[in-house]
Length: 280
Ligand SMILES: Nc1ncnc2c1ncn2[C@@H]1O[C@H](COP(=O)(O)OP(=O)(O)OP(=O)(O)O)[C@@H](O)[C@H]1O
Ligand SMILES: [Mg+2]
Figure (cartoon, rainbow, N blue to C red):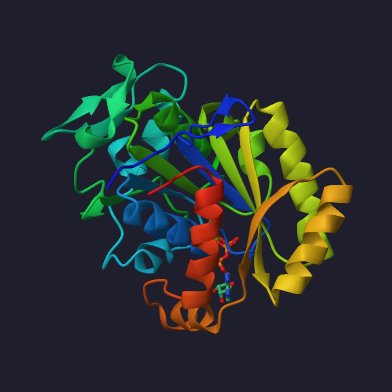
């Protein structure tokens, strides 16, 4: 199968690279991350998913894994260790058999990442930045720092993509994580609040210099509603790349903690991924 990550779109070459998935709380970021990961794998791409949400814990089972990997935060010396190390270039990531200081190096490749800081199955890898675990342990800024630095070191081959499932809202923009992403998927559910935050995110993503911005409507009740919302958003200067219908199979999988599966939603994601320039 030939994998094509580049597409001539309006004379521009599109490279997805490191893709941040963002949006309002509960709009479907993690579900869309899992669906995109699945669609990319189907096309033969190697996929690293970075769980950069310090609160929610369900992404691993959505992707079909049995457990979370050890957080990268632990390898970086935990919260205290990372705080001490935030200015000098001294945090660690697993590379090969033994931990190596990646900030002493300019680049890290996907193939160098290894367990326990990674769970892996057939070309799909999941890495976790860190979670808030204890009362009053402090803010999530060190995790934002770690996400940004880690993404900054990653160098991808043409058949590799990274999907970053971010925490809800705008904070990751404030932390500058977007300095080191190439593309952004902004997930929007059919609510005014979500549409408003999408407008804000589109502006911030452009400000961060992200060239490939894909606004995706999720949980839409019908194609007609999707088309109407696309038109409305278009009139407000936001181009919508595609939509994913509300799918009861997805709802059920989320309720039962099962791997993400849904025929309707997956059909829509196929069309979206084609539009993003990933061809069979
Ligand atoms: N296409 C869909 N069809 C049906 N239900 C969906 C769909 N997408 C998401 N959902 C529902 O929305 C819920 C929230 O989805 P998800 O956890 O992906 O949101 P999120 O944006 O990652 O949330 P958070 O901001 O808390 O991380 C799911 O538990 C599921 O019930
Ligand atoms: Mg989530």
